[in-house]
Amino acid sequence: MKKFISVGLITIIMCWLAIMPARAEIDFEGKGAQLLGEVLANPSAFFYDFQQDLEATHPLPPGKWLGFQMGIFPSLLPMGYGNLSTKVRVHPEGRLKPGLPQLDLIGGYWTMIWAKIFANQADDITEATFEGYYAGFLLSTSVSPRARIFGGYKFSQLKTSIKLDETEPVELFGTDVTEFDSGFKDHFFIAGLEHPTGINKWWSIQLNYGVGENVISSKVSWYGKSFELGLNIYPEGVVVIHPVWNWHMNF
Image (cartoon, rainbow, N blue to C red; front, side, top):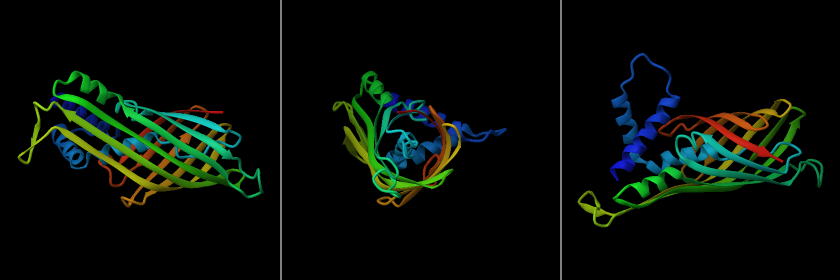
């Protein structure tokens, strides 16, 4: 259990350092303790924000019918989220009737690689599972030759489970605990605007609203044929701004 917590703390501090501006003097110990305290207060919400970093929630380019995406930073590195997302175009814009929007189905799954490794190496952890998935749809329609709007819905869920050796339980408030189960899920509505800047180059901005938890997040993205660079903003998250780098392939 100590190894698991120690490596988790190092990972958290790495993520914090990646988005903090440079300063002449930084109280690493104080900031690390503050960050860890906020994570422990709501760990599921913290890890859930990194799940949203890898979710593919902008529409397929016109003329494409299938897409795959993998979150690289911070999803795979340093968080260890092995992941894959997909998009499938069900209806291209205007095919059945002029004015009908493009319809894409979206979804994906991830599992934390580090959790499996920690469980195998730690003597007091028998099983550790961090995984999540999402599914939904997107509607997109052109409002001019150089802009289209999109919106949709997604259901997104994270599950965490840690099982300890029954001979070495953790004492919490006078009670021996051998298993931790937690999670985070919500229903989101999505709204956004996409603008092409060149051949196979776009930028987009979107706003996501979680109905169940009453939370708002936003994302600004620049993407081309193979990669996406973005900034995800979680006003109520432990780490408010997440730089994002994703790889994708569309057919």
